[in-house]
Amino acid sequence: MASNQLLRAIGDPNRFFNAIRRFFSHQPTSTTPPSSVESSPSDISKSADKKSQPVSSLNELELAKFSAIADTWWDREGPCKPLHAMNPTRLAFICSTLCRHFRKDPSVARPFEGLNIVDVGCGGGILCEPLVRMGATVTGIDALEKNVKIARLHADLDPVTSAIEYCCTTAESLVKEQKMFDAVISLEVIEHVEDPAEFCKTLAALTNPGGATVISTINRSLRSFAIAIVLAEYLLRLLPKGTHQWSSFVTPAELELMLRRASINVQETAGLVYNPFTGRCSLSDDISVNFIVFGTENSQ
Ligand SMILES: C[S@@+](CC[C@H](N)C(=O)[O-])C[C@H]1O[C@@H](n2cnc3c(N)ncnc32)[C@H](O)[C@@H]1O
Ligand SMILES: [Mg+2]
Image 1: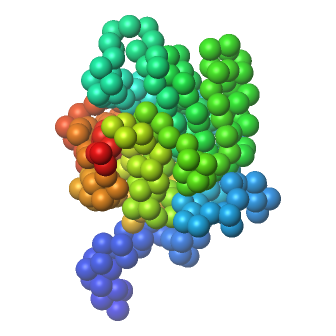
Image 2 (image 1 turned 60 degrees about the vertical axis):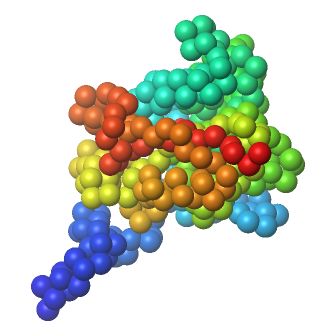
Image 3 (image 1 turned 180 degrees about the horizontal axis):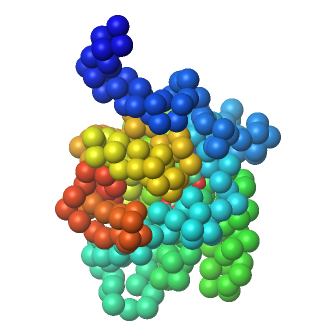
């Protein structure tokens, strides 16, 4: 009987992976958020207003996970450790691609001078701060008010970063306000939104004609299940259990197609290889786990 169930589960990767996840977490179902990432409804009620959005990117279950860890954004040894470790590497990719596209000199101190950039799902501002230091005019938005408050407090510690504009809102709300940017960046967010294809269209609508879009996320592969979920969440406990749903990951080909349908042509894709044992991250051709894409708006 048990072997029949196992065979049926192996025939369906999602069921197979959920069975393994339940084994590690001792959870009855995979859709219930584990207690380590649960949050009170009052935290979630402070997220950007869902009802006013025609096509909302908000997934309240996903937002609850971020609400639970909101105080830890700037703790480099906490749940955001991998994001801090990946930051210099993803910035190197952003710097080289944006400088090439906008004909900026990457060797100067403020290469992004004159560029208007939005960081969608900015969290505590880990990316916004270096972007503003590199000369960009930066808007950071996040669906959770807690995150925006923490980002604001941290940015105000320094006169340069205090120029960042933070707002608790969604990308779709910015579209309704007819806001547009030279570059639209959204790192490690798409795997947490309600509808990734709609989200790509929204990011494209925020991108100026001829502008650029940068997205990073996690591939839906066997390796990402082993590394980003089993190793990172259950064995090394770098992230709270249940942070990621393997079935919500998108492959590089799927992301490229969703962006193409939104008039964004992917020009460059790179792997972000994070070694959880050394804490080091590097750019690589290996896109089997974390990857980052740079695309350009081509509606003209
Ligand atoms: C993994 S964190 C990434 C934070 C930041 N982009 C970084 O990489 O340092 C995902 C963030 O996206 C936010 N988020 C999730 N869904 C969102 C949505 N639909 N609109 C805006 N922000 C969202 C969460 O609140 C959280 O701060
Ligand atoms: Mg994620």
